[in-house]
Image 1 (cartoon, rainbow, N blue to C red):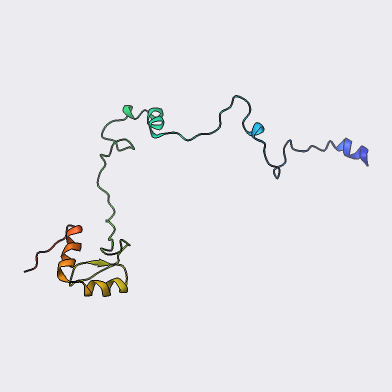
Image 2 (image 1 turned 90 degrees about the horizontal axis):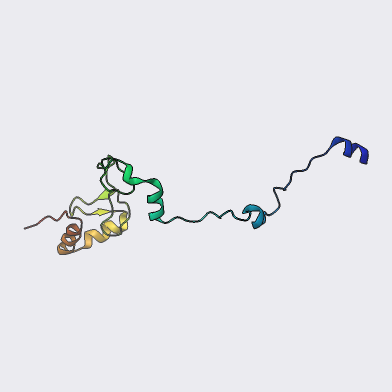
Length: 123
């Protein structure tokens, strides 16, 4: 039986997939490990100064306006608000917040609207 195994020239892989790889095998001497790059290093490597100034990239903030509608955010909680109160024009996220909005005095409602730059002067 040993002769058959020798004659078949059974070849085993050099490393078995279930064994843990040693650090010296993973990174041989002289080879650096993968490290994090700072933003300054990335900018220098990408040569952003060669790009035209009209083209938006990570360095300049000049970009066209978004084509997507802006998200409506609840004025009280900061969550996404699918509803708004037609009486006060405040946005709200759920029924509990709606009850709180309806119980707010008018001056608080005006303050919340002023934070959103949607203040309406009521006489």
